[in-house]
Image (spheres, rainbow, N blue to C red):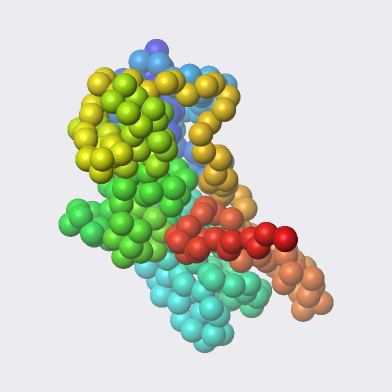
Length: 339
């Protein structure tokens, strides 16, 4: 009977589900599996009874076998090749003076393809670099551009909290993080305080955002005056941890009431008090980043000198990955009224 196992090909990678016929495979064992990219060695993370609801059974493959001693020797040789390929690619980047940073190199188990992960701020013409890599290793070469958040995930770093970054430890999927989250959580809009090692907004801002959304949906609007049985009052601030709001009376007396004690009229459905802000842009799919593949048999045709139009197709990083911190802190211009 086939079992369903969750395996991970790298420490910072996601968990993929495969079928396994070997009844002796357990957690922590290393298995050989075939993916759309090629053969790879993975580690068994868990054994489940059923597949996730969003995963169709037809898309699940079978693991080939448990890793043998011969496979372990091949894996060690691939690790040596990874180190040498990293050094060789870095030397070529310096020699050709390319404005790009090599982050990591991945060698498939059967060496059918070498994947080079890099970051770059602008457009780059690295046709000659691809030629050098193909001629050196005589296999398929893939250059894959990644963002700064994925770079931090691969390299690892220590965050401002003193712990290893969440993206390196357990976070496998990035969600949009906006400056609006920092404002709703009453944080100081200091770039050094709410930005991570990667320069983006802290991923942990999204951990408690759902609780803040629930709280703000039940509390009165800040800055608005309400008519109560004790006279008109203005809402100064809200405290989610105390589940209370601070009010200012006409006599300049400040009161603090819990949401249960506050009897404000409910907000009408479909008519929010404040104008809805622009929705954060959805996370950019990985395919929008630059990915270039070359095969030894077609390297001259694909990257010939006459194909200058290819340079325009090699796009750099898009500006729409998510709302950056500078855009969120930029003051809005006031429109002049026409007299």
